[in-house]
Amino acid sequence: MAEKTEEKQEKNKDKKAKKPEKQEKKQESFEDVDILLRIAGYDIPGNKNVYSGLTRIKGISWAISNALCLKLGMARTKKISELTKDDVAKIESLLKNFDIYPFMKNRRSDPVTGESTHKFGTDLDVARDFDIKRMKKMKSWKGLRHMAGQPVRGQRTRSHFRARDRTSGIKARRKTAVVSPGAKK
Image (cartoon, rainbow, N blue to C red; front, side, top):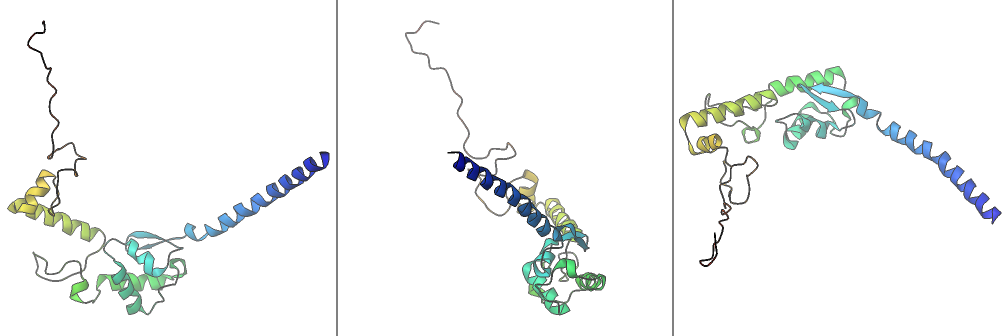
């Protein structure tokens, strides 16, 4: 009996000794996350690849990110933390005047200017807000739906879109007291 308890105690000591090693491994894997690189006004974690890291910028899709990597001649698997200041400057300058196919742009035939451009970041948010304001002002169907806070793209509203306490589907009936004809009041 005493031998078994001694063996268990030794195993427990071995387990306790192994636990700090696991914690050290976890700390090593998080070292890359400490590095944040700011590209076009967005913080991108250093442990990401260039290909996936650029998609953190609003308005940059996977296809645009791939096109950027090909245009710059940069490996897609290169880590963001490995980029130099020159590389970041090249990426930002290419984003400002990026020449891609018109079908890849997110602002084709702009209603105001008529040009096809690609917007990202806050410029994309501002353009979207102005579009919604313009639709509301001209009172188009989409503008009216935006004003009412209803779904714009033709979704059904019977069972969804009720988060704002505006029910438009089934309404609950009021419960009325049923009084039998022979009952006393």
